[in-house]
Image (cartoon, rainbow over the protein chains, first blue to last red):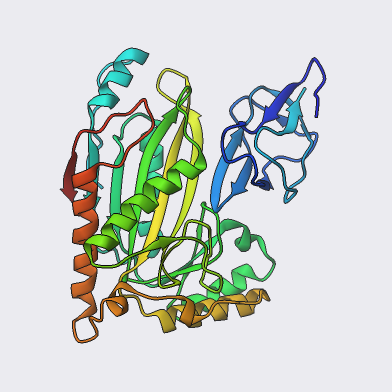
Length: 82
Length: 279
């Protein structure tokens, strides 16, 4: 999955959990298209009975790429901010 | 809650050096009569960890009867009404931030929370947090004379791959919460809560009844079976002893393992020995 040059990717760290396991966003705390500020808590990822907070790496408009409850592997870009 | 430990200096190097000087801090909380406050204690520790005001901390605590449920369940349409009904049964519903499915807590459950931080450059995965817990719990059960194995127990409440079981029956469950933030000098940091609940001597039947009521309200089928669970009290054949004696043994063994072995942490922290605080 790629992101445009002027957008900041929101990626789940690639080494956060074992690569053969799926995680999922349990809740997006902003809607697609919302304006967010850097360091805003924007999503909660759940894997293996563990919750992991995703904060905005930049300020701008949030574009969600992976909807809630959709499985993904670590390292996935789940959104970008433009 | 104890007074926060001071962190000297504001420069990055100084902050790291100070953190490396801290050993594990062991807290054994007095029994709390408010389940929400008992659970909130972990969130306070996470906040202090993010702020650089907490050394790696092991908290042993218990709660009055309550049902701890994943926060997402509280968003279901019937959840508020169901939670009110549960209060009337003596099992208030408390949302939690970590993953999994509902867990009944009562004073016979001994909770262990490990709170520490991860910084950029630390090689630490979610699995490492679970192993930190399961190694400690396995050693604790061994001290009590029980051979515990790690693995998911289907039919137990809140099943997960890092459950601990005796003869295929769950005796402890685990979960984690990672909270992101920035430390005092603005660097990204993660505060990690790894949590376990040990079935020392709970009232399993009452807990499962409450679980069934909650699941019924929410329209979620409950697949929990009492024969997939055990307790330290039962596993050791302490039927004639008071459950409180078993609970005391579990707490003592946990505390001893923490102080004796100081669980290994991410590289930026260093622990040589543990100190204990009785709350």
